[in-house]
Length: 423
Image 1: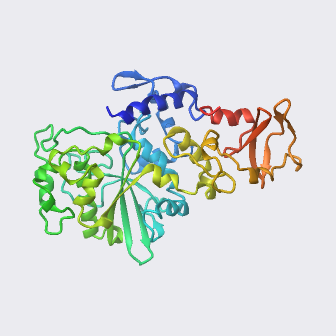
Image 2: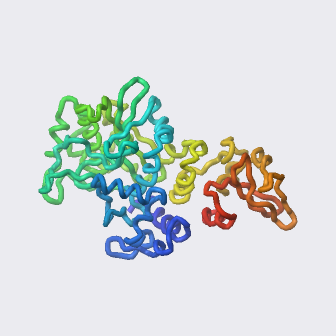
Image 3: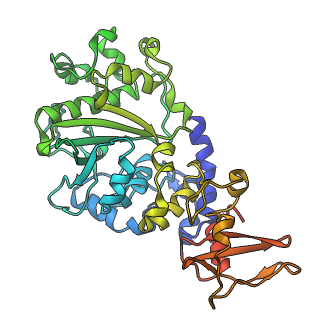
């Protein structure tokens, strides 16, 4: 088990025990692989592993498209709070029906993105697809007796996929490979448990003249059959074959890899013969991909940390949830009202949605008057309003701290409960 997963398990267990996002029933230990575990939910409450606003729509989409939840049952997601697929859905699904916000999220990675396009005709208003395996069996992977490929299980699947038009008129698909707490050892995967030599499945694509990988840097094709390189190889081949087929009219298909910077375990180069190509798995893979624009890697912290959520009010509830649950994301050091850099970001990071002095000077109480403050008894008006934005003040030591309310809380006690880990 990696060190990042070791720290995430108790962190997620603590989040479950104190957060208002879970019902009382969900706070109990859940059974996972035959044992009760504090970092898991009871199976009957597994849907609470998802952000509240997507608990109905995400499972409905997965069921409609016959997508498998990893370790899930009864069309519910995994009950493990550190599940990578759940993490991916929690971060990305809220953007699926918000094209403007999705463009703003992706623009730093794809600067020429112009507009996003749906990939599935059954969901014309959805702009992110999940567990994408391609329209055809491009990799010639074995299909079982049912004669049907399954998204999310037994076939190479991108965790998510986005299609967009660029300013130059080209249509591009980005296959998203999402990581959370994963870490890998140096176990070779060339031979499957069934005895199948996996190299024989993918070698025909590897030996093509236009292979997307730089074969001259590899001693042996088998060197790629160590995680995460085995996954990356299949994703890159899938992207290449989709591009050759002009799937959904795309002229370019690339792979976007997203993983927490805090998960240093994932950086390890697990394939012995690839260690000479770079100091991290991503360094190695960037060297192996022939065309630089066909593979991009970005940390979760960088991608979401620079998103100007304050200009996307429809995502404010989601952002509050994400920051509480995945607390390794960078904390804001800007005023939650005007988005100006704060004079003392270290102090401000101790309080959620901190408001700067300049904005605080415009605060009014519910009567439209300057708020009352009793410094002797550490008391005063609540809530206060800055440019009609509801805020709460914490009165203490003769002064106060003003914080923006992104949940429209009924009273300050509810606001405190939302940020229980702070107060």
